[in-house]
Structures are given as structure tokens and as C-alpha cells.
Length: 240
View 1: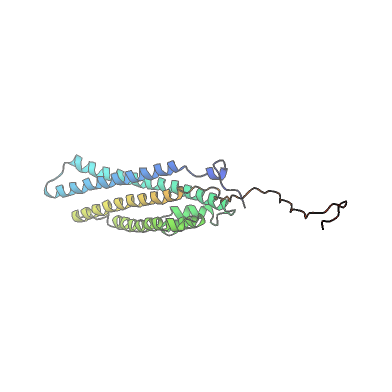
View 2 (view 1 turned 180 degrees about the vertical axis):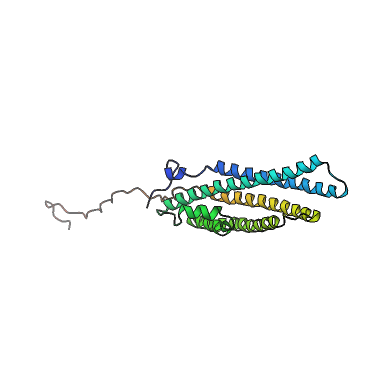
């Protein structure tokens, strides 16, 4: 069996550090929260605009802040996806190497399965379940992975609906779409929080040598010779 991946092993250094993954996830969560807040303000302004016209500067500022928040959210989620995928690939490589095997899936398939939209809804959870199974932690991580996957599917559905309804020009349609976008950003932040929990579930168990159970045994001692039967001296007569 091949030796396990250690801190000095080049194979274990390919992936990002846990602090980098957490920073990427935290940044994305924060940006998603800010994007939701910007669209909440925009929705309030839409309600105000029904009864009184907003100053052009305020209306334009609300519009462009929403656009910038959306662009920032897209960049943040892409960076988080790249960082977490890189970590997962390195983790799989280390775990399978620890087991004396090669990762059964090529790296290009892992990258594509995690980064291609819609396709990743199917394959990313599969890759994580395979990793948990290889680490013998599937019973502990099955729940967090399932919760993350269900929330992700729901978030994707809401996002697709929000994009499909974003081309309306009716005031009520714009307001309804803004509400949908707010829900999509909040769900996206929840998905990232659940992914953080899945990540913590993995890093809580480092890839290292399996524990050995040592059994204390007594110190070997040479066997004592059995007592030899008494032998009468050849020069003495046996007792009567």
C-alpha cells in the first residue's frame, strides 16, 4: 500500500489551504447578503415610485447598484466554485493515494462536473459522496451533503425563474421579479453556508495514517526449568 499523503507530500500541497476555502466562501456569502439588501432597497423604492416619482439620480443609483451587486455575486460564486473544486480534487487525490489507489475519475471530469452549470447539480454531490465513502465518513456527512444539494437545486430553480422573468417592462412585473431576485440571493447565501458545513465536516477529519491499537503484553521471560527428581548418590545405599 502506498504511504499516506502528509504535509510534506507534493500531492497534498496542490489544493488550497482550508483558510483560503473559508475566505472564498465567506466572501461569497457576504456579497450575496449585500446583493439581497441592495435589491430590498430597490424594491422599497419601486413601491415609493408608485405614488411619487423618484429623482432621476436616486432611480439610476438604485438601478446600477443592483447591476453591480449582481455582477459581484457572479464573480464571487465563480471564485468560490473554483477554490472549493480545487480543494476537493486535491482531497480526493490524497485520500485515494492514502488507500493505495488512483482517483477513479480524471481531473477534467471533476472540473467539468463541478463548474458546468446545471450539470454540476448532478455530479458535484456525487463526487462529494464518493469522497465521503472513501474516507469512511459517509454516515456522518450524508445529511449535510443532502441538505446542501436540496437547497442548491431549489436555489437554481428560483434563479432560473428570476432570469426568465427579468425581461418584463411592466411595473408590477419588475416588482415581482425583484422579489424573486431577493429570494434567489438569500437562498444562494444559504447554499454557501451549507457548503461551508460540508467542507468543515471533511476537514475535521485529516487525511493521515489510520490509528493503530496497541496491545500491552507481558515481557517474555525464559521458562523456569522443572525441578529434577532427587537422585541418590551412587556412593550411598538407598535408605531402608
